[in-house]
Length: 376
Ligand SMILES: [Zn+2]
Ligand SMILES: [Zn+2]
Image 1 (cartoon, helix red, strand yellow):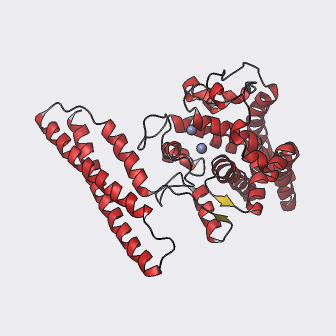
Image 2 (tube, protein in one colour):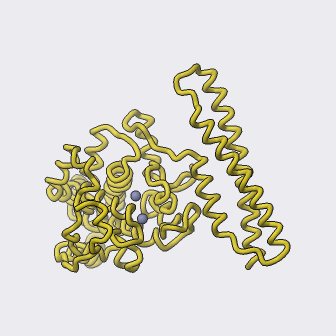
Image 3 (cartoon, protein in one colour):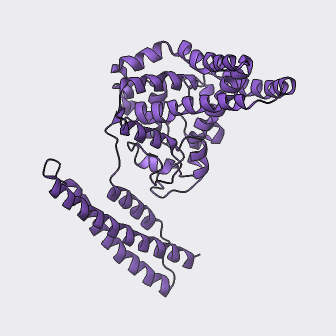
């Protein structure tokens, strides 16, 4: 089936998946039932928290920096060892193989909020969060959208042996870590069972909460939103409005202070030579999206003062657009193979233009805020 036809294919065939449903219900139910009993009998030990944290970081980064930013979006290149680690720890998060995950995710971006989006938020918060996993995929759904991944032997290996890999890294490893500390069952309970539930819902929140909570600085054409709260539970994936507009960027939180450990990991790997070709959206493209989005949402002027603000905003917009064009031109002309002196000269000009653009954008943003307040 071609991707074009897929747009009209049913999103849900109604076939219940008892295995998925049982797993998603039993893991939290068992955690809630067993943890208090275990703690009552054996008492608390900080080692439980250490195993839980270590397993959470490893498996959730396997999903966010690996399954998501590497396999689904190919937002950077990385070496085979890193890929292998992503695949084994990503499997330990018990969210299916990288192939299946990436295929679903590419459909999500392609058909976001519409039929064909596997976790379409318009079908309700619960459906987007985890309800969709209770059902089998529509028969029409194919792997047409992951042809690149189907050529990767490591990805195919992980798909073939997904279950034994997932059980080994997801449950055997934390049990073994617990065994080394003298409490194997606690290792299983905190690092395996409860950690699976915790990482599950951290990821699920991206499909539900990140399409409901937060603001939309880059586009209101998609439901995706930027939120610090969601970012905190998902290694930085909560800057979801930015991500839906610039999906190939290796970052989700673009400011240095945005909580985005996945970005920091990829950046650090690059510094040690383990990753390369990190895709960064040029700043002028980001300003362009913000400007157009803010301008579209300006309320209609209803007073003389508001009318004057609108005129001023139009002038500032034209000024910013001019600066954006200038910056884009400079970036295109950046000398890649010329002397260092010439490169330094270009970099200086780029920085100056970039700073001027930032200043004018701030002016525009402040005036736009004032105009909105005037009309409310
Ligand atoms: Zn999304
Ligand atoms: Zn994505």
